Image (cartoon, rainbow over all chains, first blue to last red; front, side, top):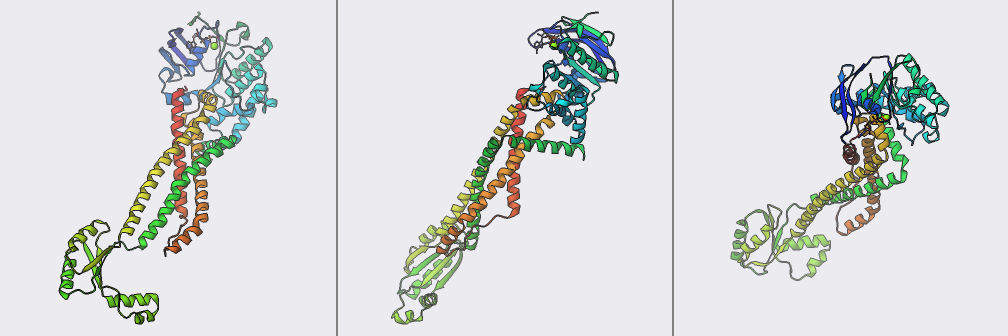
Length: 217
Length: 302
Ligand SMILES: Nc1ncnc2c1ncn2[C@@H]1O[C@H](COP(=O)(O)OP(=O)(O)OP(=O)(O)O)[C@@H](O)[C@H]1O
Ligand SMILES: [Mg+2]
């Protein structure tokens, strides 16, 4: 599903965040991306989502070369992904359900269908009782759940979760990881990054470890 | 409902929602646009009335030659000959003093006047009309006729019509210039209100792009916002105009009466009203489009 061929990423500042990465992720996999802070986990996910472009190498999503994608094709590519950001990127001017409605409106669902899917997504993460709550009134863990609900609302085939358990306690972390495990069981490919090896549910997926921009064998 | 239509309906609803979310700002912007628009529209209505009036007037000016009371037949013949050799002459009519007196008494509706006047005081006259309405003929003809002993006085009658025409042309150009300037004003004002809306919504735009929104999806509500603003401004400008016409109507009528004129302000037809609103809507959309393109480019949102 995703193939990286000798990918390197050097940011304009001159810092090389990723060096010579080659790997392949098949449909239906659950992949844990780990490594110390600054190892390049976010950068790798951003390359896949075409938020950043690799400096060298080729990056394939199915038959599409993302490293050479045209700007106007990016939106259509991204509709294949459910993105969960390290910094949430929730909209604080609207309540929970309207945050979840955004990708559904973008995808062009009718108002009725969009609401039904948004409710279903909120229900999956256990936030349905808080559908009218403003994000500021949600706890850190609940905000993260809302972010997940938004990512899964359109049933994308690939979930890219960047540090979804960033500053949650171990119990909240485990329950979020179980949610990803559930999605993976129903066929969604999931890539989750975490700097905390303890977050990984043992024996549930492949672990890719990054160290200073390189994949550890 | 098909997807395309739905996306547009969504964008329109969003635009109206956004407009309503800052009611005071929106109202102020729309009213300033409306007032701006009503100015050239009002001038156009005034000019239209003037144009109708002008169309009813003789298209040529004329020149009247008053002759000396006692002129020899030779001089009269010479004059007639000179007149018919004038360049650019469309017509010449001789009005004898008897004919003039008869016309006068008829106008006054009082036959006793003619009887009371022992002697007809009116002179013989020639009325000359040029083939073109401009003042160049007047001085040329004066020079040509200067030698004629039969002529007592020469009077140009065409000047005021020509002045009116010149005034109309000036007014027309002024209105067009004003309309262009104010059209630019509409583009800049809606551009600016759109820019403010955009800046307020940058987080939403950023997130939308990250989760797969196309440029069109992001632009659309803002374009509708410009369109709706322009349409509303056009509609309100129209109301201002109609109110203005209603208020001025009696005054124009009484002035017109004094001048024996039929001049009147007319309500422009519905077709024009719709075209006017449509144009202001398009201008609003243009302003919004410029603002959106600019903001999206400047922020280089991935
Ligand atoms: N936009 C950027 N410009 C310049 N350097 C950057 C940029 N983004 C990241 N970097 C650098 O690239 C390296 C990798 O960053 P990245 O965010 O991928 O790390 P990470 O593994 O996600 O770390 P964390 O666990 O703290 O989120 C870091 O050294 C960082 O300073
Ligand atoms: Mg990171």
